[in-house]
Image (cartoon, rainbow, N blue to C red; front, top):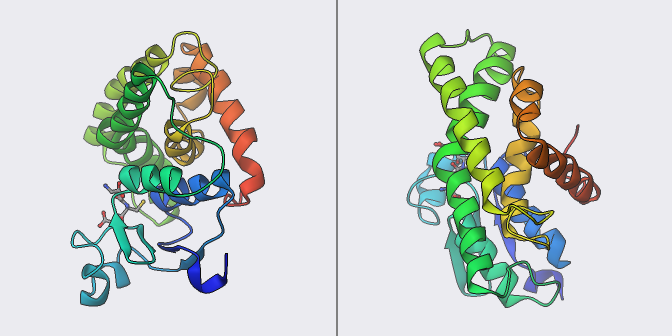
Length: 213
Ligand SMILES: N[C@@H](CCC(=O)N[C@@H](CS)C(=O)NCC(=O)O)C(=O)O
């Protein structure tokens, strides 16, 4: 593909959602241009809001196709480009994949990333003290998220079955941050299958070169 025909990702390299989209492009073997957009500054300016009315990252463009919201954007990437299929073919597998992604978006991102990792690791690095109420709520909700993810594919090696799917790539960047939270080892010790998955997806996605640790 000529550089001008490559899709473009608008987002910051620190963003877990931008990383999920970039991992999907990487897994498909699709090159892309990256336009750095910081979610908190340029992301709230009119030029970017024209691309993403909610001012979040990432946004995406491929020819005339302009998208935002990571899950449907990744589905588009899987369906529009050649490369390994990243969605199960059976309806039940596809539903499990969607369910895992929804759990990440609606519960686990808030709890594992913001509630445990940001509160205790990223926040203090920036001079903020953890909020005990938020921390307490996140510690209570985290086991529910982990049990739900572990229950989705009781047999398979990946989150939604036997093959790597968009669910794994969606969850991978979030689990990388959660793994730095002080509670990670203890919480994951009650979820041995999820712990194995977490190690497996970390190893599988390392070659993408998106993570500096
Ligand atoms: N629902 C969005 C979530 C994207 C998201 O929350 N991105 C974060 C960065 S990882 C962001 O833009 N945060 C800025 C903000 O919350 O204002 C998606 O699926 O793409």
